[in-house]
Length: 73
Image 1 (cartoon, one colour):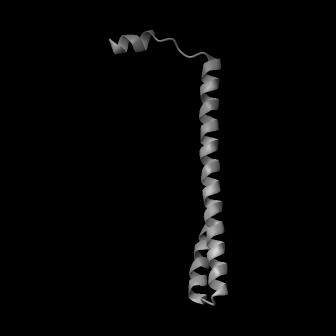
Image 2 (image 1 turned 30 degrees about the vertical axis):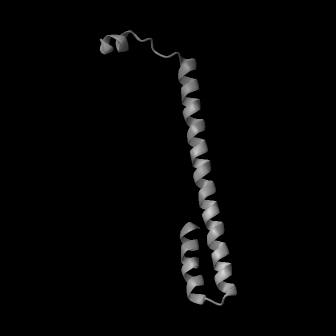
Image 3 (image 1 turned 120 degrees about the vertical axis):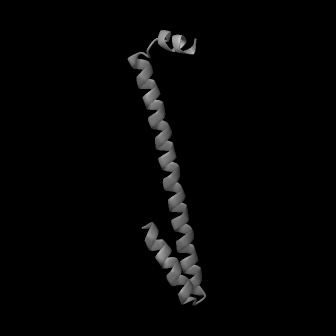
């Protein structure tokens, strides 16, 4: 019975398809923007930890943080 309903279901109009595609694109843009903000936030945290390590004269820790920062850049 479900197959029959699927066959009888009208195809979406071009306007409906456009609306659906635009909705999906906006959603993906938001996801990408969120990921970019997360990476930028993590970069800030790494830079902050580098500065703190430099203030403490902890060269080893600062070098490790620099390699992490280089991985982001």
